[in-house]
Image 1: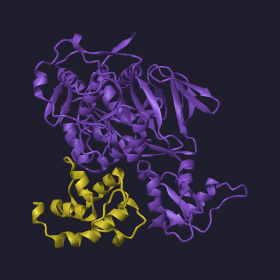
Image 2 (image 1 turned 45 degrees about the vertical axis):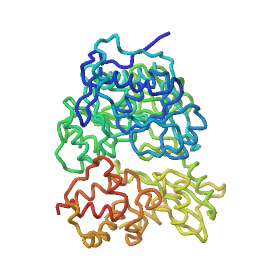
Image 3 (image 1 turned 180 degrees about the vertical axis):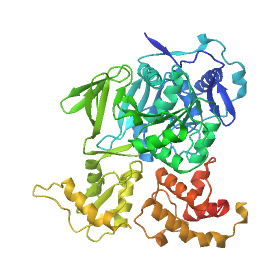
Image 4 (image 1 turned 30 degrees about the vertical axis):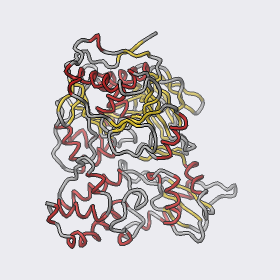
Length: 451
Length: 94
């Protein structure tokens, strides 16, 4: 049986994480994980809801020590929790905040007794190893039908994922202190803060800074070299804030396309290379590029792309099985490729995905709605978030009434802004709605009306 | 410091902050329709964290201070139009 160690760090006195209270060593981390493991059941599923990146990390390792699987849903709605409860018997929540977890079995992250750390392990032989084929985590995607799809990740593949990214970013040669603005449970944050630290031998900031001033504070709290793991949206807000930024050595972005303008602005402001990651929850991260150096992406070590008709399939390396990608891709020699946009029906707003088919179905199901269609306008600002518009035929209802009904059915980020009531939709003779006609309707009803 | 802000000052700030939210987010709602004590998230205006960052940016430019999320403050500040206006009144530098 092949086993793989919990982390790549070999010095147990090295810093593993930075928190507001100061540094936590690799040995402290092991001691905390062993102590928490004693309070978890022997098998089953751990719904790790900790906001604090360090507590999440302790929970994850404690779960592995107990042979558990980490569940990482993309939302924390009551509906999601009910579905997980029905599907994953023996699930336990681990929380470090006031999350409403219904009646699920729950463990609130206990105050870590410092006494455990006194006997913390001192030698490398204490680093635990886990079977490569152990089902370590299940991440969820929304799926085009709107139902969560489980993406199963084995421990061996997760480790390979962290190592491949560390090599691609050069962190294997020069570990950085990682500050992330993204949640640790979702695939990008999970891979680029947690796995990257674990298997790139890096330390990370335990918090999740949100406002520009928080990000500056978190960066200042960790030593150089520093890596900021963020999104185009957080980055754009950070640069617009015109505050003093501590030195940063590397910038990383994902979840939405980064414009070359913002990338160039970020590099000019910080002097750090601005890298982008391409991937999906299904496949894990697949490639990286320096945005200002051109449109070409380079695959992470070990990963392969194959063309299968109109689809491109990711496989090999840390990819689980064969994963069809939702983007149109042009393969180039030397492990390189170009992205040519998403397949038309799929939309991605601030990293959350759904399909127009699903949204239109939900809209049509609202009582009183006769006809309706969602429309995603062409990108307005390259790094602003483009919101959806909806055109709705609903005699007797107000736009607000329809919106209130929709809020029960779809994620808030997909709510139309604006929702426009119309007498009829410009359907053609086959009942289809050509995008050009919706675009014209949008120009008439929405964009012309803006001051 | 925030204790020194009178309810009248906060009340007077409400229309201005409502206008700022509607403009910053391009909302389809007249500013006067935003209820001062209704939640801005969820069943109220249905704002999300992206909106919060957008509003924070406009606030920092207009009122000259940076928002910081110390613990649960973030949720409290954005719990309603009145709470947000009270926070601005207590922190504003211009």
